[in-house]
Length: 86
Image (cartoon, rainbow, N blue to C red; front, side, top):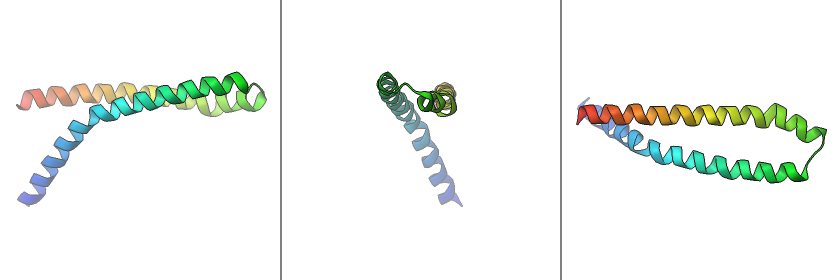
């Protein structure tokens, strides 16, 4: 039982420590994808693209932005919790 508790605590520390790089990776990947989408839009201007943008890109954009906000908020909460424990 104690081994499980120690493993769990180590896993939690690892999760907390790895959240910031994950936020950075998501932001970086999203910037690249957005730039590529803008490039594609400049070459692809027909009803298929418009439907793709409406049905797929716009919802994805909203989801990524919401995820980024929530991950940043979670990182702040974790940092605050770590400060209060140490």
